[in-house]
Image (cartoon, rainbow, N blue to C red; front, side, top):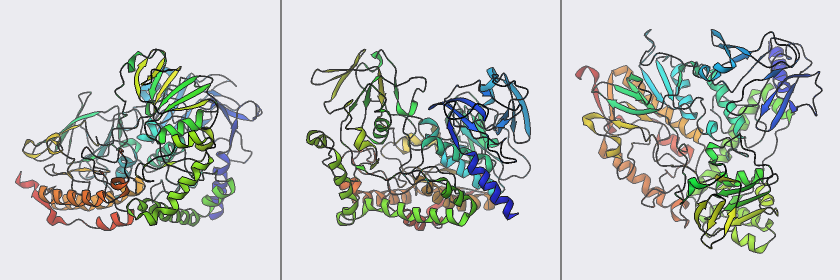
Length: 620
């Protein structure tokens, strides 16, 4: 049995090997070829028994259909384009023929579709009549808003407890949250890949030390499939109202469908809604323009003039990825960023194989990199002396900028870590290319031909890209939430978003959040944060179920906790570093708890139920 598992692991590694199509792969070996963001690719048949029919496809751009199947007929392959579908087969096709009709498998349910039906099939995963729930003693009715990292985690934990009576409402047509939305060139995570996973689901298949966006999306999709989450997701359900009726919640989506639930979990994510700057004439530009989180994959930047507005993490990643292929790129920089010269590297095949063959090895790697990530994140609230080594690395890296004038333009005047630290190794070289310009003059307006700055100069371009970040303080809004006594979330959050330990809200019985207001931000991986919060939250949920009660945090206790978090955050580098950033709320105070992941775990080890009010359901 052990030998069989090891052989399967070797086969899994071999299946991941792919090469550029046609020019590299002999056509007689190619099983599947299809369009992807990077161009054509193919998958080589592996000459091992039982492996040749298992294929791995890169995620194609949205809307791509009509794969061509080469070689043997009736092959089955994963198809990320159709979210939630486990597999697709194309039977009876001649070599090189286009796919006209696909057969699909979703768990135990099978069906078929024509190419024109693909969009509707996307919604098959988790399809159910609105408001209908399981009735076989499968736990409380739980409704989760959002199918990103937090929503998937919550669903897995519900199923682990045998609570199958839940639904995830996802407004998009695919799961994945930020890793579904952000498909711009160079998109990657700034947390080591082996840490950016659920602790119970390590990923031995990461290809690079810092994972790229498509690989991250694939990981979370695969985990959701493996743990049976897909059948609980309803896509295209944009929630706009959640209303407490005295005993439970009625949740309404914009399409008119309604759901009744005993417990609601808001897992909508933090970096979700693109922030587009209010620039006069923004809609007058004659060419394509889009936010990085809405990247138009039908638009090629090759040999084009690109105006890139914004110089934060996404702006740095985009510039470093496309500078070599554009005719010219002009980046508009309001504030320079500290860039840490992170050493990203491909993980060799033999190490990935070792991760698969020896699970303890990948677990040990997770623990080691988690410690590293926690130590790095904790520097945000350490002394300048403690941060000195890291900070000096950022300063020294700027010496790689040969032109003194450009170096001065790219050198911040605030402390390292005050803004989100940007991670890149390639940016330092790419920003010095002759076809790259950095503009620091303020933008006056957008015109049909390009961007005009305050000095009167028109910067002509063919494409405008907005790398201008997100509304990081919306949280679950714009959903309208109405709690007990008619108290609304907008009223409660009019001054500042009030929560208790980031997971519960006063006057909102049995309504909870993951990654809510005042959650730690730049000090830990979001995956570790939401796992810690979920473990705490499930202790509350189990009490709700066992005692059949409504639970709400006390408002006065919530305000005391909020005050302590804000006071602690003011002493962090986010509050003392001398910059303006999206870490700050409208009062100029950091909106994130300045604690490390171990400290968060300690504070959330067990709920203090004296901080809550409880009311038996029988009394309502």
